[in-house]
Image (cartoon, rainbow, N blue to C red; front, side):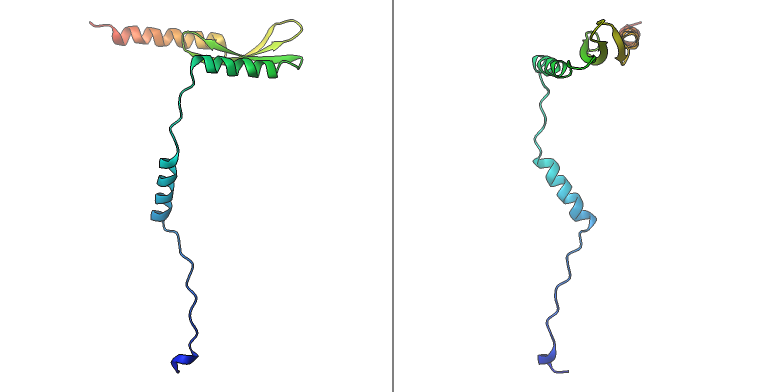
Length: 112
């Protein structure tokens, strides 16, 4: 068969190997900037905004800070009676957890 009759072959599409995929993921991870932790004032401002936004129904939710754990929990409050309908997670459970961590800290930190 003469060379003139041969047609040029089209190139095959490139196949991504695991190495190529891992390299792309690493490049994307490196390009992302580290996130800053918001300050307490920024969190409180955001929580107030959320509380004001949700205020228009017969019940509303409030985000509250558990002081000992420095964690937020949610309370569902009835607008008419101002009664707490539900806490997520329960404040009592958070209090028990805080007491347990304090007790464990006393045991672990105490020198014998």
